[in-house]
Length: 136
Image (cartoon, rainbow, N blue to C red):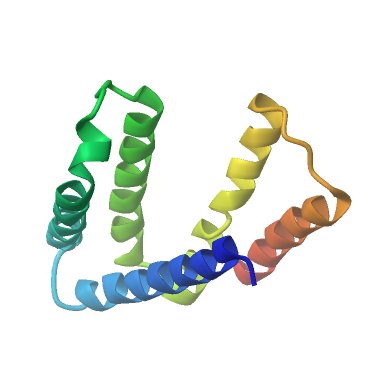
């Protein structure tokens, strides 16, 4: 199995576990405080990352606007995710939000001129159909 597939599986499990803990956290607290603690967890990971990779990060440092926009998008998305989790079933909402790779694929095709093979296009189509089925 290729290395990126193994990493992808770990990411899938970590994000799945994280979403589950987000719903559990909302049983005990407000969405805003849940986001505060989620952010604190992220800061711990960021701090360790910066300490371990500081020479790679700060050598020839420059502002990377797309990376900043990525962080802002994920941050606002996370706040909205937590707010929605407070009032929706996890089993319905998470599959809907898990469709975000289809948005990424469409943007990549439109702006980066990436091409989809037939099986990839079918996969994106089936993902969209699965979300429609789950959300009804």
